[in-house]
Every structure is written in C-alpha cells, then in structure tokens.
Amino acid sequence: MGRSYQIIMLENKVFSCFVFYSVLLVIKMYIIAIITGQVRLRKKAFANPEDAQRHGGVQHFREDPDVERCRRAHRNDMENIFPFLFLGAVYSLIGPSLVVAHAHFLVFFLFRVLHTVAYLCVLRAPTRSLAYVITQVPCISMAVQILACVFWLYR
Amino acid sequence: MGRSYQIIMLENKVFSCFVFYSVLLVIKMYIIAIITGQVRLRKKAFANPEDAQRHGGVQHFREDPDVERCRRAHRNDMENIFPFLFLGAVYSLIGPSLVVAHAHFLVFFLFRVLHTVAYLCVLRAPTRSLAYVITQVPCISMAVQILACVFWLYR
Amino acid sequence: MGRSYQIIMLENKVFSCFVFYSVLLVIKMYIIAIITGQVRLRKKAFANPEDAQRHGGVQHFREDPDVERCRRAHRNDMENIFPFLFLGAVYSLIGPSLVVAHAHFLVFFLFRVLHTVAYLCVLRAPTRSLAYVITQVPCISMAVQILACVFWLYR
Image 1 (cartoon, each protein chain N blue to C red):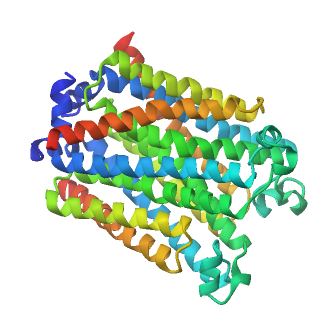
Image 2 (cartoon, rainbow over the protein chains, first blue to last red):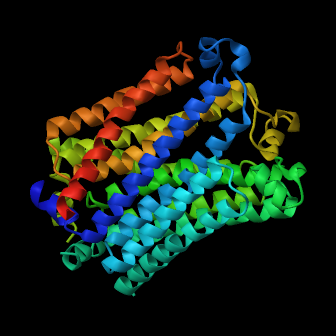
C-alpha cells in the first residue's frame, strides 16, 4: 500500500491546501516557543529554579511581564490552532469546493498570524481581539458544515 | 478523487459518529472562550494592559477568581479533549463495532459536558473530579485497543 | 466499508508505527495528570475552593511549587506533543521510508520521555532543555518534508 494511499490523500487538493497552512501555523507556534526562551534569557526570568541556578542564581526564578505575554500568545494559539487542525482535516474530507475551502484556511491563517503579531508587539486594542473574532468565522463555518454533512448522511 | 475518498471516510459510520461528538466538544470549548471574555468584561479583569486601557484604565489589568475558573476549565478541556480527538480518530480506523464505539464517544461527551458545568457552576466536589475520572475510561479503553491492534498486526 | 478502509490505514506501516508511539505519549500525558492529582492531595494544594473545602478547608485552596512543576511539564507536553500528533499523521501519508520515519518517531518519543523525567525529577539543567531541543529536530524535519511534498505536487 503506501504509495496508493499516499496519492489518494495528497491528490485531495483541499487536504493539501489545508496541510500547507496548518504546517505553517505549527511552525509559527514553534517560533513563539523560541521567542519565549529568548525573552527568558534576556530578562533573566526562568520558570524553574534549576534553570535560574544555571543562569546566575535562584533569584532569577521569577515571572516577567514580557515572558507572560509570550506565554499568553502561545496558550491562545493552543486554544485555537489545535481545534483548527482537527476541523480543517475533517472539513477536507466532506468534499468542499477548493476555492471556498482555500478561503476558509487563508482567512484563518492570515488573522492568526495578525493575532500573534498584535500580541507580541502590543498593538493597540482591539486589534488582537478583532483578529481572534475573524479567525473564529471559518472555524464555526467548518464546524457547521461538518455537522450538516454528518446529519445529511444519516438522517 | 475527492468524492470517492470523501465517501470512504464518511461511510465509515464509526468515524462519522466520532466526528459528530468531537465537533460538538470543539464548539463547547469555543463557548468557554466566549464565557471567559464575557466574565472579563463584566468583572473588568483583563489579561493585557492594552485591553485594560481600552476598558477604563490599567488598574483593570488584573486577575479575577471567576476568570481564572473559566481558564482552568478551558485548560482542562485542552488536556483531555485534544487527546480524545486523536484517539477517537485512530480508534475509528481499527474497525470497532458501531455500538461499542458509540458508547465510548457518548460517555466521553456527556461526562465532559458535565465536567464543564461542574467547573463553571461550582458544583459540589467531587462531581467535577468524578466526571473527569469517568471520561478517562473510554480514553484508556481506546488507547489499549489501538495498541493491541497495532501489536496484533505486526507481531 | 469499514474493514477495507481499516486495512488500508493499518497496513501503512509508517502510520501504524506513528500511532504506536503517539498513543504511548498520550498515555504519558495522562500519567502526568494523575501525578498532579496525587501531589495536590499529598501537599494539600487545590486549584478550586470547592476541592479544598472537601479536603480539610478553604486554606488548602493555594498554589504549591511541586504542583506547579507538574503543571508546567503538562503544559509543555501540550505545546509539543499535540503538534507532533498532527505532523506525524500527515508525514505518514507522504510515503517516507519506514526506517527514516521510525527514527523520527523514536527520537521524539525517547527525548520527550526524558523531558518529562527531567522536569518531574528536577534533573540538573540543561538536561530538560537539551531534551526539548532534540525533540524539535524530527518535528522540524517532518514539517519541512511535508511542505516540500505539497510544493512538489502543485508546483
């Protein structure tokens, strides 16, 4: 098997499109983690005594507002990008048109990136909240379409 | 392709059943996020200085017990619903009977909803903890069945 | 359907290999949750007033360094294992060689376990950070290979 199945999945253009944006968003999350680590080193604010010990002493085992901001951005990503990974994958299987599906994925991707930029660069409120609300639109849309599809099949 | 593959996935009744409850649980998580936002506005307790500034002043950049409760409920959902999205999807592929699989998904769904209600409405302990323990039963069951299936194929 | 589709998925040896390590990692996360609960009971430090009330009084509604350590380990797992569940599943579909794919999954698994042990047992820095960095190598590798595959198909 392998080859044949592989081709089935990847020749689903909607699925490939979804995978493209999803992998970029996962990489975006990894970048937040790297930034968090850099801010911890620069501000000397570590989450664990053993890390603080290694970087100058246990007094550096403390919270820092900039580190907490990174962590909030990261947590918000988990709350929103992980559900997207699920909804987008299932949505790809219910046969949407490529154009419509692409619009869903692109809107989510762009405004999720804006959300992160607004968070880390402290853009003026309500930029970040608006970006969040807009990313929810394709997610709710996909959720509703998936439920409709399941209902239609088994009514 | 598209159509044919789509039909393969959705004519797997176990998978469709899993998708149905999973999407409802994702929507449940979105609702917790909305509630958190409403509580933040009502209690005037914001996670970021720029949000507080917009809603009356930087003194509203503070924690609030009701907001923290919502955030704990949301985090607990991430710790448990996200693994379910993975286990349930794989479990749907190992060919369980629809009745048994449905029981797994339904128990997880119902007690996960109870968990959220118990969290947000401060139901008496140990309601919430019991709901959590019961949701773990179908998860562990699915995990064990998946491992058994993989072993059986490649022993 | 059912049977035939099931066999397609599970006869993808790379996918089965991925599923094996992924389910073990999910179980590892469940174990952290159990440990957190045990530490809460032992140290009498509860996240909710209603839990504290049940275990001796509202003064036990408090934070504890050992509990917070467990929670940091759990959160770090969410930040890293959940993306792996996505990347690994998609990576299994792009037809990598079993040996190479197995190496990716095994490295991630082993160093993720080491990360948890280093966290909970307070191993000397930078053991934990090194384990984290090493687990990122297969993840970045899979992400790049997936993107390359999507590009190659649709260039």
